[in-house]
Image (cartoon, rainbow, N blue to C red; front, side):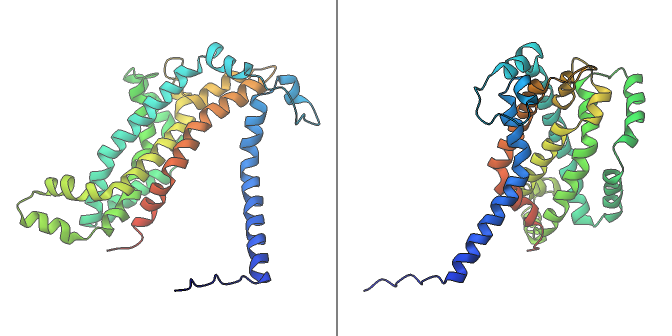
Length: 280
């Protein structure tokens, strides 16, 4: 049996594809240019960075990265960010998943609106009250204070990601488990959560990224012991000068983990954000 011949593409179709990919490349170049410029300059000396026009061909140096991890002790700041981000994400899930499930199943939209308002209100509104509270409790410069502060962002976001996801799960699954003798908690942990993986992964990843990039709470509630990477970058900005090489290397260091995380988990994020759009 003869194989069907592939359909020939017209010149207009080929031209349309070429235009499409050119536009995609232009858009990618526009968004990637700052990051690529940052990576490019992180391997230059301060004199080479300041030179105009810039040198496109040069001998790269690792001095900036050596300065970041030796003189500035950037590894400690990375560890602080990981602990605080993981802690705020974990406790945000512990509190946010049951809250989102209760809102979805029992139509508690008033509570959902209150959580949304807490998310919309600028974080700086909570900054002074939190500082006074943690100072009275002697919790300034502790992981606990920063985790609780970062949960102001993580918890509402997890709730609002998971509410439509739980609403899309057929209630018949839970009712069948109840008929078989399962309690509400057993149905939640054994039936609902296992099939909510994409939504949970989405909420966890985005909550961690928001915590990782959080600057405001960290600069107010953290000092030398719990300083996070966004605040640590300020070490390269002095009164008289700016260490551009160290600043670029530090920026690349804190951007790469989030970039790698996004590349490996983007399909889960897309599935999680779109799963609640269609109710089954």
